[in-house]
Image (tube, rainbow, N blue to C red):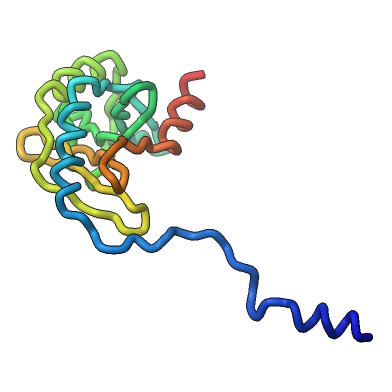
Length: 169
């Protein structure tokens, strides 16, 4: 009985802890410029991945083009097959009655990524402890590049990377 009482007394109150995101503390705004510079240095090494073309049951078509860096996807760029150009971030395009040739999409997007520029501003996502640096093309934000909290490394989109691998292997 005494043993049971000691065990009950030593149990913590409430559920066991779970490892979460550590508190971020004060934000060092000088790291914003460092994050922008990191993406600017990586920009010449960004490539276009295989277009992700999805045909729906009613004949609709949706195209995303992955942005690749060192074999990892960073973000998806929405592609408008009718305009043959990227669509702004947050506006995925669905069109009907169009067949998309992946070679044409790659050709167009390779030229567009050469014209892309790094926006001189950042967003900070506290839950992810990451800087978000936008890429633009002709005044449109077309992609977001995630950079670590200390602005030392680019963070891939692992889910998108796996999606590409599943579709291409």
